[in-house]
Length: 452
Ligand code: ATP
Ligand code: MG
Image 1 (cartoon, helix red, strand yellow):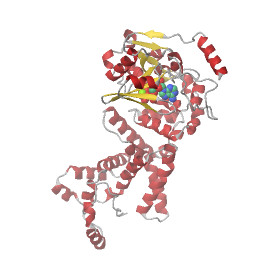
Image 2 (cartoon, rainbow, N blue to C red):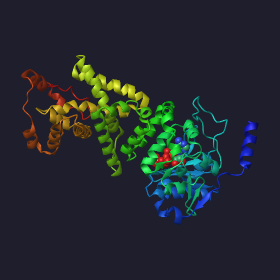
Image 3 (cartoon, rainbow, N blue to C red):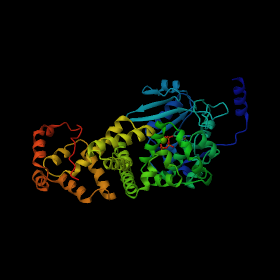
Image 4 (cartoon, protein in one colour):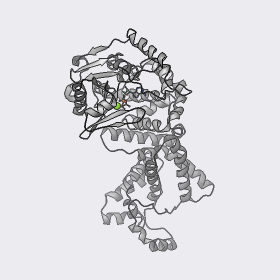
């Protein structure tokens, strides 16, 4: 304890290797009105109470790069308790890494207290991954523990100046992603930084500094030690960044996709699987960029579909009945992938809904299409079918038929129906089951008939 204290005092006494640069609006180009008013008011409130407070991290980086930030972080020398007392609508989040959420209307600003850089006493796992990171520090130390130079910029709304300890503004203007400190050491501390490097480079169209790029391939396997829930969060960020296609391309180049989604490499090696996944990612990118709604369930359903297909095929070859075989295949894939990826129960439910509706598109006679179209997840399932057709795995004519069926009025739908080829026995059974027609929208779909 005393040793640590002495070391810290001496460390503070050393001349700073990173003189701070003050960058004015003419150089960084951020106009005050571009900054969210909630972030400005958070800084104002803290500064009025006598604290330092800056907009920090991704938001400053994005504003300089001309991108609208998705959220705002504020860094301050106030402790979480002090922050909490200043803002009536705020709450402390997290036990180990305490931060404060400050709410203004619908917007939430994440306020964190300056943290210190690591030293020899930092708790790490056997691979060097940092397990605890909650020692408070000053602004310079806070800058040093951030990952990339472009993420260590502090914007003061009061003066309009950016404080830059690691030449982040210059790197951003030169379109280079540079690590603060030694990239190998920083990846060892937190392997997720490899994924962040790829994602941020894709998002901001940056070149990876060669020393940031070089160790990734050989260190990629460290990703496997990252807790599943954290990996899942990072994966969602990546897939919904609006640049998923570019991210996956870069991940494959760097051998990083193994850790992310262990079966993704297998899927991407199957010609139809690769086409399907890439089409789904391109579709998601478009939706994100157009500000449309996206759903993790849909995207994961696409990523894992070819795995389900392969598993299902294998089971049918072993003479398992098609429907139970599909259920078993789905469960097996979700169980293996779900555990590694921390797919939540709710998302797993959405994924299965979409998969289970696929075989039902094959029935285009009788009342089945009318029942299918009433399903709550019909639209998502049709979008899925549409991608399957575009990749060549399902007939295009089938997807087109369902589009026409959706758009037709009742008479038009009747006219589109195909002749019912089911045996009279089956038809009778179906009619006697007609209470199915009144099934709740999200009921488990009745077993499809397979006319194979
Ligand atoms: P975006 O919000 O676009 O996903 P971001 O860089 O803002 O990107 P956040 O997860 O919001 O990502 O992190 C906010 C800031 O916290 C970063 O800009 C960076 O300064 C710091 N940070 C985040 N993750 C790490 C990490 N793994 N190691 C070091 N610093 C990090
Ligand atoms: Mg952010």
